[in-house]
Image 1 (cartoon, rainbow, N blue to C red):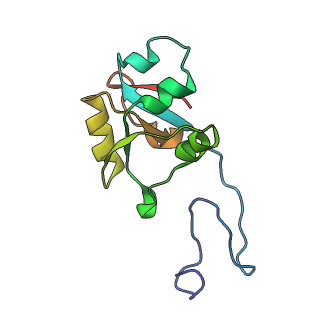
Image 2 (image 1 turned 30 degrees about the vertical axis):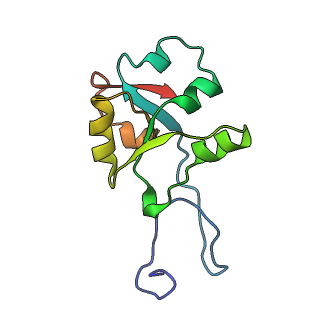
Image 3 (image 1 turned 90 degrees about the vertical axis):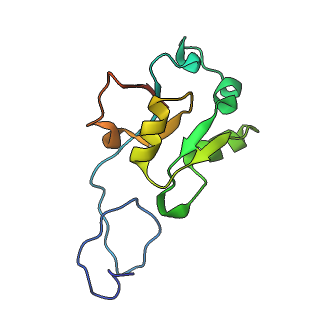
Amino acid sequence: MPLRKGRTDLEIGVRAASAPEIRSRLLFRDTFIDVKRIGHSLFADRNISVARYAACHHIMAPRRGIFRGLVGEALEQLEYQCNVSVVVPELPDALEIVQQSDLIIQVSRLCLMALSKETVGTHRA
C-alpha cells in the first residue's frame, strides 16, 4: 500500500476498511445507473420486474478484477442471479459493446457525465 509506506500523501477511491493511522473524509456520493442502448426491450415500459432484470444479459468491466458487483449481490439476496454474459477489461470497451447490443451494464453516474445521451440511454438503478 503506497500510502502506508509513505510514498503518497493522498489516495482517492472507494471507501473500504482502513488502517487506524489513515484519516478519511467523504468527498462525494454517487449512484449507479443501468446503461443500455436506446430501444432496449427491458426499458420499453417503467415496470421492470426483478425477474426480467436478472434475465437480461449483462456486461461487466470489473474494477480490480472483482467479478462480483453490488447489483449481483442484491439479486442474490432476492434469490436471483445476475446473468453476466460478457466481461471486458475496461469500461469504454463495455460501453461501446452496449451501444451495439442488448447487453446492459451498471455504471457510476459520474462516469457517464461525458457520455452522449443520444447514443446510450440510461435508467436509474
